[in-house]
Image (cartoon, rainbow over all chains, first blue to last red):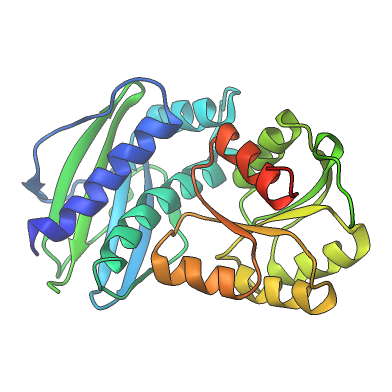
Length: 153
Length: 128
């Protein structure tokens, strides 16, 4: 997987988070995903199809997820109810949508699926056969980790 | 819709996302609009448009049952003067062209900003 292909997903996520949240969004180092541990947070999963296939995951703690949903709605979200879930799905959709637009305007033909939100204890999301690159984005509400797992174009 | 006063325009928001509907509703109300109603997919959008006759429609593209571009064609088939603004997370050239070719008057890329929405309302309601 080429870094120039991963970059649009990371830069788009960073830009969108900066638009919908207050404060700076700092990106950490890109790294190959370590062995996955069962998580207890919230993950938004977006499938990518077309010239390349794979998925993009946005992982965050439950606390971070609720705080982000709260800020985006200008009202506190105390539980992961339908509005908070929908807000996080829409956020994932905006982040991947911008990336897909950048790539498609360069000549690729890619489409994204509607996001799926997974939340709960001991949830393991496998990206088994695909190399996964991860980049942590630091928000004022905590870390959002962008995972890009795509077949090479 | 021969003459529309921007300060009292009625709008229809079409989006399958509750967050997006609430957010757009808030922004449009803040720039002087009045909600005529909402729809959660393209099929409902056509039904609601015919029933509510809003001054302007803000339409998402990717929705279940019937997508936004098909809904625009459906609405334009009934009312060639319909003023529809597409609102999408995907803003690549081919998609924008497809939306405008279907009869939409403008295209906004999410996340939308109030200033941008106000300016588009001015444009589509012919007061720019």
